[in-house]
Amino acid sequence: MEQILYGAPVAEQLDKISENIFREHTNKNKKPHLTAITVGDNPASLLYVSRKKEKAIELGVDFNWIKLDVETSQETLDEVISSEAKETDGIIIQLPLPDHLNPEEAINCIPHEVDVDGLTSYNLGSLFSNTYKLIPATSLAVLELLNFYKIKTEDKNIVIAGRSRLVSSPLAKILSSKSYNGNVSVIHSKTTNQKLFTKQADIFISAIGSAKLYDYSFFKEGSTIIDIGISSVDGKTYGDIDNDKIGDLVSNRSPFPGGVGPITVSALFFNLSRLVNSN
Image 1 (cartoon, helix red, strand yellow):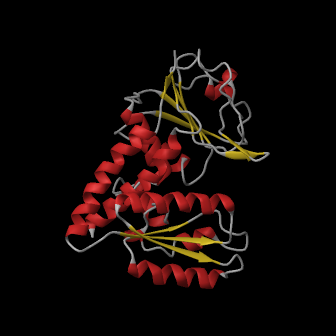
Image 2 (cartoon, one colour):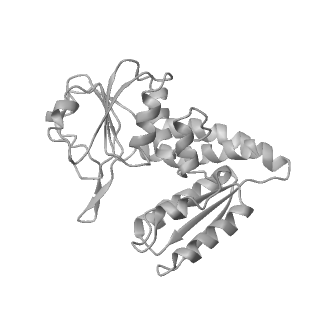
């Protein structure tokens, strides 16, 4: 029988840590402050930032949402980021940006000491020198899920599907580090026979964003499946994993929804608490 890896108790645990730090700073007349920037009216982006605003209110964090027009130029966006970064404890740019904007340039306008998402070249680079203070929120959410449910990673075959800077790069580095000692492989759209990897995976982490891409035939008995992917088909959202017939095969599975998602927002505010505590 599979164990369902629900994210809510993990998120609650992180929130308690963050809230204590935020309360301490508020008592010192230093109420934490988070700034979010959106460009355009992408429905998913607006929803995600709305959830972050709700969590900020819940945890006692001042939240400043800057909504820029879809036609905003790169120069204007960069100027807004640089200006707002001087007045906040943490700043996020909600991705994706409109096609005419360069997300890499925008992200790297954020000073690393307020880069709450941990996505600047400086903060990502620090992951590879073991000097990091922050882990990108989605990657941190996966790590916290594994830790909470005591999923062993040492000498386990860990396969990550996808190669984004948000998930696969940070996770591959950290899960193969001495703290986790996993044997990590990354597969992607150019991987010829993905089952050669997935059928050997003790832990499979999918961050593709393609509805029900992987069914039970991809996995071995007793494996752990973590679904990060999200995609929309005919107005409905789906994860990457097709759960039909999977319950009798795997040992552990994060649900969609209700798995990694709830932890991700809490992980962002956990990162903010780290930044607040270090300033």
